[in-house]
Length: 457
Image 1 (cartoon, rainbow, N blue to C red):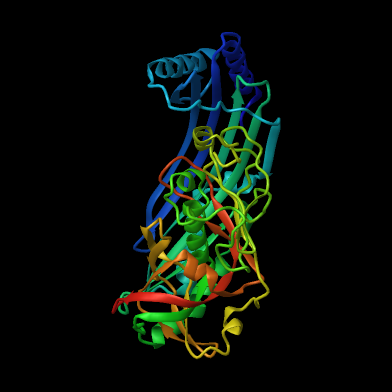
Image 2 (cartoon, rainbow, N blue to C red; image 1 turned 90 degrees about the vertical axis):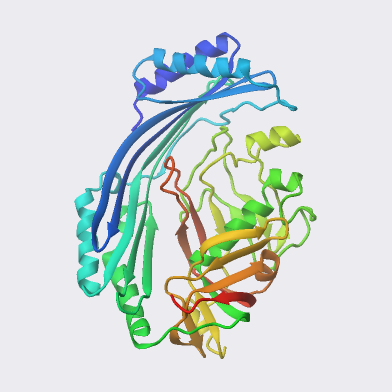
């Protein structure tokens, strides 16, 4: 946890900068991370790191300079040296065509809404034991892989704009395991997420995997013909599609530059089906809650789509300055997107009991956008995808590709689950910045375009 001495020395350097007329922000990003990877049913990577970064940004007229110092702060001179580098970079930078905005901490904040000491101090041996139990209980005949990332993220921020300070600390984890049949060449996957260690359960993973095993062992894969289908999208697929739609359609900069799929529409116009609502809500427990962004703005519930209507655009501090808008609290790596639930039954099979043929696609993989301006996306099923007829699971389906538009898919949502779940979207390839969406556990969507299907899983 960030000690008071570090806070005081950073505030001291901030006050010195303010007295000199320097416009600067100081942000500490500290993480304690552990990552375990599994390959060939054994631990292939077991690594930990503890890092402290000091990020500085200086605004000098229409120039700005940024600098990151990777160091543990133990004296003011270290912060002074880093500030000097940022000041020199700003002095040498080219002028922008607009006036950059400076970071301003709006409210004093000291928050730990989601901190669990058990997860923060999790012994890697417990992860290895959990994986071993899953392998044993699910079946030693299979080959297993996966990964489990967990850790603590701390952010502390001050700026010369005022004397306020903002601090956040939280824990997060993302667990995955992939079961592969050496003979059938099919794979099953299970994920778990949360900010408390007790949100992870070996029993849950074993139950979900073993429930699917007979389907894959006893049935050949079904090759889906090209065409339009009613599709049950699982929470993973739904979160991927909506997050892509939001960040290419409600992004202020993309909208202003006419790049996004909503650029020909204005807030207040209907853009998707009236049963779809999307809010950035940092108070939702199924997301990773951050009460302020990296510009110091207090984050509050922010509607993006309300009953199908385009409500607002997201502006980070740079886009807001460039286009003369107010920052909206989206200068962040950890948004808290929430898709509103519906009135569908908890069991998706009940929701499609009267359908002669439905594709159940839990998640989309290798998702990309052939055309951002037209809102066209593509992605393939890979794990756990099923053919369902009259509410009964019939067989697995081969790797099946969806290529469609946000407008078509999100205008044809027939049913949304009444159950909300958390979907983790965090990356393990950069600084720790936990991301999770709160989404319905499934959505039934009509007329989804299937453009290709492999003859394998």
